[in-house]
Image (tube, rainbow, N blue to C red; front, side):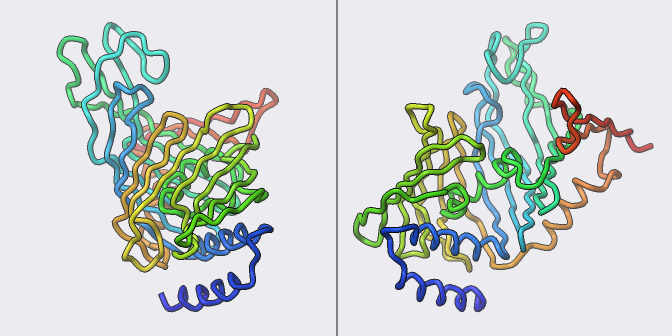
Length: 315
């Protein structure tokens, strides 16, 4: 906490010399993001969809994120889920098989982002819903999948930072230019700018930045130029009473996928236990209780298809 206060004092000094007419506010956002991501850990309660269809219901998850020096790790464990409703011939997501609706979801997930590679491990379960008797609640297990990506890959970073954004941090990386800044009063600045959201497609950002509280972003939207409506909507509230200045509650909607985040704990130190557990689950083969697949996007063939490797189940 002492380290944070010393650096925060320097940022506040710089803020007094920064002009909001140029990219000064963006520079401040970048400084605060860098300060947060340099050494941190957060524990969250997350509510998010179980599957893709509305009938799949919502799940409650425990999510821990931690990082230091450009490396980040996350573990997600699904605690509970709503009953899944029967869907006849779903357009996306699950499928109807032998008269029953079958949908898969990730019961656990581990992510490791380093300067060299990004790795994501998914441990899925399967729900089978009978049209007459409904959801039995007896979820079956399926093969684990590890995905390996090049560094800074959009998909891997999206899966991780979607949980950071509702806390009010992590927006500077998505902005390339500020087009206007408006003072809304009470320390709130409305920033409009150009940028992206975990893809190469550009669009327009709108942020409401609380300059009175460590430049936390309390509201945001992003619209790609090729679309009429925003694809990202975010709103946060409630300042946390933990070591790190963050919002304690937030909701982010990415297309139709809505995630609600509640902050349980935050610290200005990397969580060594989470770091070791995630590294073990992703990299240690004995952790795989059965045969699993590795999809390696760093080794693409001539058809741009990632290399697939099926691991042998431990004897």
